[in-house]
Length: 262
Ligand code: ADP
Ligand code: MG
Image (cartoon, rainbow, N blue to C red):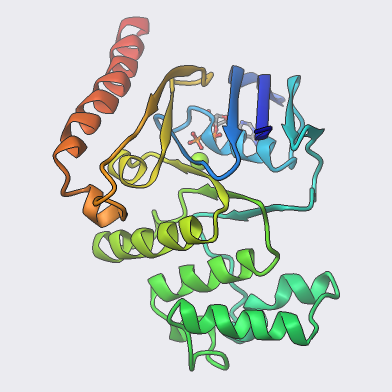
């Protein structure tokens, strides 16, 4: 099968009046269709920069990013993203928010309205169509943001620390909800996070980045027995702590490298 996404030798630096900040260096990986990939790395290592490159918001200085074999451009159809902040518009109702993308694309027909209503019901937001975002809990807001993203039927979902603004308990249950929704719909997804447990409990594979400029340090396939299908169940599996220790050690090494550089 052709990969959904190919990242080939990508490097990127920020140029400011104070000088150059290399953010990413020679990143290459491919993502097969339907994979749930997690990318972890220390704060400031270039994770959000990588996400901006993957959705075409910025262009690589070196290398290329291809989706279905075609170079990614800003506004590339078929890519949806979810960020740390839900970016819901407070003055619009929940229905007004989830339908916004379709409204802008002039695709808000009867079929689209039905699809939105089905998703609102399936994801526990039935009855909140006329509520405003401020009336919803953090978890409900994130689900509304996910519906807004899924409404555009993206093939590839890019998630940049989407749960980190939530309190711990909400975070566990929203992560469980959202990742099972993504699995059920068969999307290809890339989750960027600094939370190792979140990565291990959701992903098929984890890419570990080094400190800035981010380079790929290791790629770890994650495999749980089928009875541990959901993120919450994975956290209770025997394999979980051994994966955690492996990723932890790989990241720990980053801290040592930095200490030696000092
Ligand atoms: P992460 O998401 O892993 O925390 P980022 O991709 O946001 O990291 O940033 C990587 C590095 O690039 C950081 O050192 C950050 O300070 C720098 N950086 C990010 N955005 C800009 C920008 N717009 N201008 C200059 N430097 C930036
Ligand atoms: Mg970031």
